[in-house]
Image (cartoon, rainbow, N blue to C red; front, side):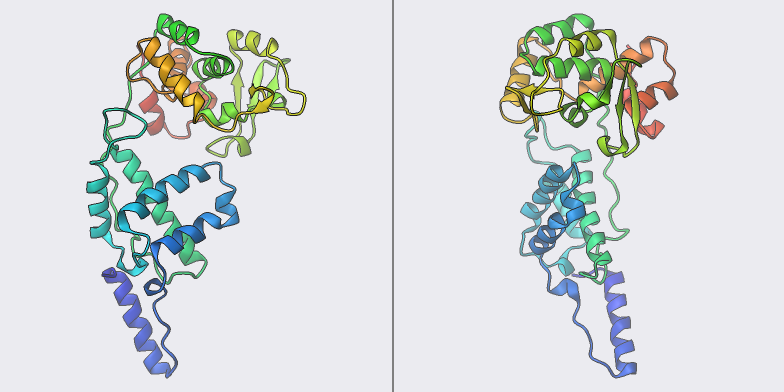
Length: 306
């Protein structure tokens, strides 16, 4: 049923309406289903423009699949979300064979729903967010300590084809995020000052970054063919690459297996870059400025010196 706070707010509205002798409005949450809310939220221009829109679709899709698209918003409460978390953690991870969905994933999915509910309140589509202040984060033990030795990285490089090989080199040497690499343009590359410059619009955190170009990356970029009809750096048959799904994911999985790297993800390359920066004597503040980490708590999860 509705949360206690929502019920109290509703009771207050009814009492005020009786005093004022006016029509009592129906609870908006009693009319809107989860499926309708999610569809409305994902279609908002500001949400549709997010770089993480596809991820939002996936996360809200997982929540909707479990709770049911016809579930009314008024019926969503802490107990329902706790049950969701319990069941979701039992599912196999599509990204990591042999592993289950992690607590961090569930936390992000529940946060995505909470964000959608808050946006609905802001747009007067709902009277209240039934989950406001209700959900505690699950304990996350997601710290990965997998970094590659120089020999392991060279084995990985030998198992990859272009342009995947070049993109992996950038991730390993510069610590750039996958999306930043895919959307990198030649305008971002300043050979004269030897920096890659990303604007706030091009980073996950919304803050601009200046990344020193590693000599090996510089040589690769100088010799990389440029496209005729696009300013993107990394191309497949002359066309921009929009994501790492499909053949790229298959190529990555095959290369990791051939190089005998075990449980190693593309994002782990970012750990490698940060680890290498630390080993070469850079302090935490310098590394955080390069990697784009805004808080030391998140940075510490990456800073595993070997």
